[in-house]
Each structure stands twice: as structure tokens, then as C-alpha cells.
Length: 184
Image (cartoon, rainbow, N blue to C red):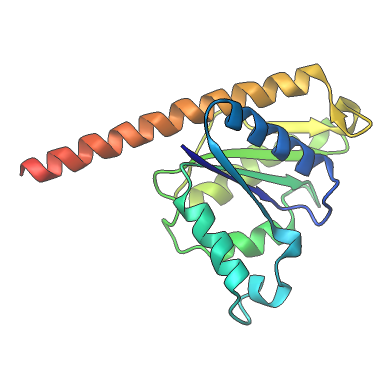
């Protein structure tokens, strides 16, 4: 099973990036081959669609070929980062059909927890991904020295387990659909 994490944070040391790394580690322990796409290092003009870039094309292809896509962002103005938005704008409608997605966000406090359901879930669904029920939202209080507490790590593990089960179900459904199409 292939897993790609997309970091929508402009900082390599952000809490959202840390949670993404923890999700990738949990999925790796479940047997997934993991990769990380760090949007902050990609050329801005290419992310804005102003010019072509092999790095951006590779990032898009990597995400499109994954079984599971984990997307993380800090909360800005009550929603996901602009960096994540411009990257997702580069996908054609339906580009992530059949992919399981894990939404991950961090914010200063619990007031922005709904960004998972009102921001990330619709963003991922707009490109066809099937979003797991249990998104991950972490607050500043749930981190000590950049490390998530046990409760937050428990949510990471549950989200990873749910994504694996969902991806396996989606893969099985594709197999059933393919075999029924061939029988016709």
C-alpha cells in the first residue's frame, strides 16, 4: 500500500508537519510505503500555475498514485493554508477518486477544530478522495517541546488504522467492479 503525506505548512518544524510525520510513521508500521511532499520547497510560480515544474508535476503524480493521502496544514484564518489550496487547485476534478484521505490540522486552540469538517474534508472530496471519518486536529496545548501528547498520538493511530481499512475496502471495490465489467 502506498502512502503520500502532503505538508501544507510553510515551516518544516510546524506542529502540523510533526503530526503528518507521525501519521506516516504509523502507516509505515502497518506496512505502507510512505513518501512526503513538502509544498514549502516547491517553486511558487509552478504552484500558482504560472509555469511548468518537474518537481510540482512529480508531487502531483506521487499523490495521484497513492492509495492513502494524508494532508496536513496549520489553521490560518479558520481554514487550511493557501499553500495547500494552490496545490489542490492543480488537480483535475476526480484526480483522487478511489484514494483514502486523512485530514490533519493544528491550531492554537479548540475553536478551529471544525476546519477539518468545513475546510479540509470538502477540499479533499472536491478532487474525488474518500475522507476518513476521524480527522486529526491538534491544539498547542496537546504538544510539549513539539511532541504530541498520548491522547493526540492515539488519534493519529486510530486515523491511520481507519485509513488502511478504507483503502483496502476501496481497492477491493475496484477489483469487484473490474471483474464485473470484464464479465459483461
